[in-house]
Length: 138
Image (cartoon, rainbow, N blue to C red; front, side):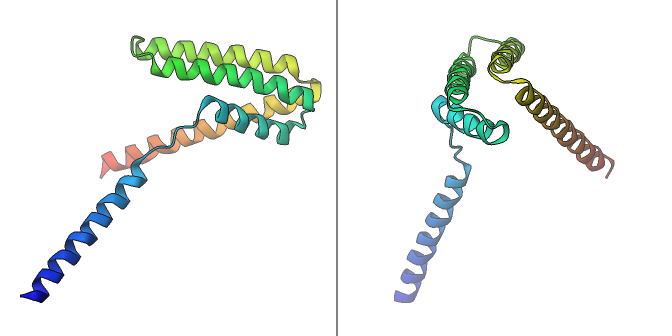
């Protein structure tokens, strides 16, 4: 009898640990606008060799974009298409502001970086479609 109680308690504790552990994996850590702007500024500084003055300007531009993006994501009154268009416009505006901060060499590097990122995104999208198509055929 005592062994069954201990086994039951052990099983209950093990199940509780497994359930709580799996729930932690599902939580998404959302960065604040400050953290997103800081992270992107650091990446740009590394890849584009930004000066201290440029870093400050880039951070301000990216922080402004991040706060506006957060506001758009939280605005439940907007339709999905409207939100997408406003975000696209915001990205375009941010890109033109950033280009005004960079010198000619940095602009070239920035444009190449964006093109590479776009190609990678398109490749991921294509791979995702290919996987879906192969699953449907089975």
